[in-house]
Image 1 (tube, rainbow, N blue to C red):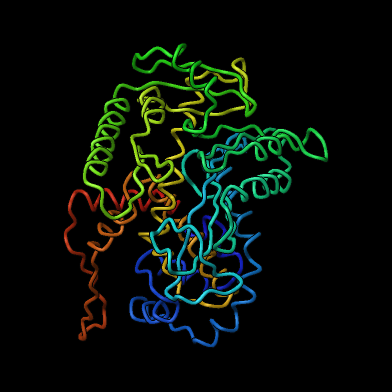
Image 2 (tube, helix red, strand yellow; image 1 turned 180 degrees about the vertical axis):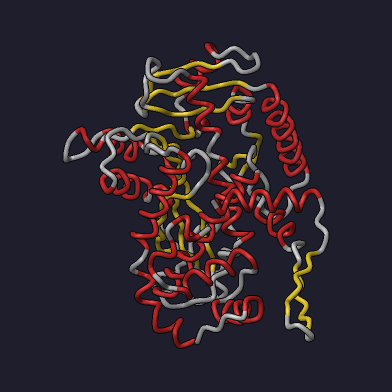
Length: 411
């Protein structure tokens, strides 16, 4: 599979073996060398790993190029739409430095240093490019440099980036739409909207114009582009339940004040706490409503398609899930920058292989590996004639299907 992606072109067997074992049984680099020897009878020296780290760091650009070329060939990727998101990877230490820094942790590890991992994927969720930043980097500041660099590097004429609400700001929108070096830098966008930050005027417009019928939507002009809002009955029921639960909790805290707690619907003025009726009213108006910003006009893309495109953002969340859980990208045990970068590079390559397998087999990488482990061969040596007899354990229907998929993948 790595050969198909082009990852074997470097002639670095150690790198390819580390990618393979990262998928099969992720572990530390030294433990991985033991697994490679135990499972495949392939021995790599520790010193070889240490000696090649600096060379492996320099392979990032080429690996991304190979991965994108593969996406073009296999998925007809045309650079028209990309999905962007970030996550955090924490370290198994409490000591920070210039690269491993404390910041907002998406892993609920606020006391441990981390790095920020940004990734670009296609509409299938197949990874295309990535970058890492110091752990205290604000995620909203990563979007512009990465997407602009991606567009420039691949000479892309038209590009639409889809990202979540954390990436939106007036400054980001202005930079996406224009740049100091001309209109060629313009990037179209579809991003989530934080409706809680809307002006009273916009909130009133939504309240008056958006019908509370399932899947109804409207489009409004704002300084951040077009704001598209849609209503969902299912979302309304969920939001209403959460609001009522939080209001009940706020009332209970007000009746039985104790240890100071930050509660959503309580406001404190001049040491007096009371229900925040303004926020309750605002929340009530927005029940069941979700918002999206885009600079694309209705002739280019209608509201329904904007919403549909944004909802495909879950594909990048799936990619992060595979990376963080199945491939165990974190916690990271390295403490020097080069080994950290090599670790993320290996995990990116393993993610590309894993995601392709998931797309082609329509099953998770864990289910795929579990089925593959049922494929058991035994070799018996006939000492009389020195012939080797190959015996295979009878396969289940599901495992036979996996073998068929493997044959497809090998062509």
